[in-house]
Length: 86
Image (cartoon, rainbow, N blue to C red; front, side, top):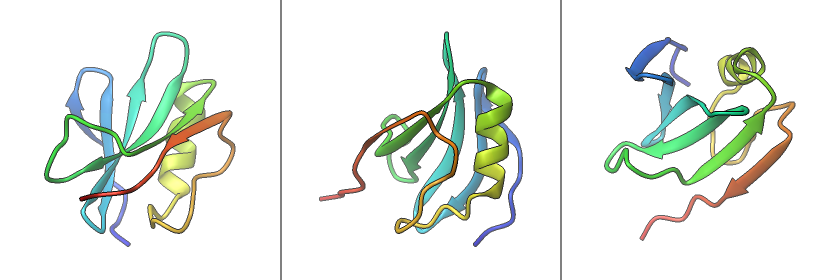
């Protein structure tokens, strides 16, 4: 597991770590925030995501999560997507 960092990728988009070819990032949305898994080779898409009520909740969960494919961050309100690469 890589050590967590906080790197602003774009306005409202922060990278926490990279694990097994995926970036773990936080996105500020209009009404909530999300943790997303973004493939290193195509950062325009998100394979899995988890919604949180606030940026602080998402940041705390992303910081604590190891980012492995067989685990999920804790405390989310909604999740979606699958990690399937062809």
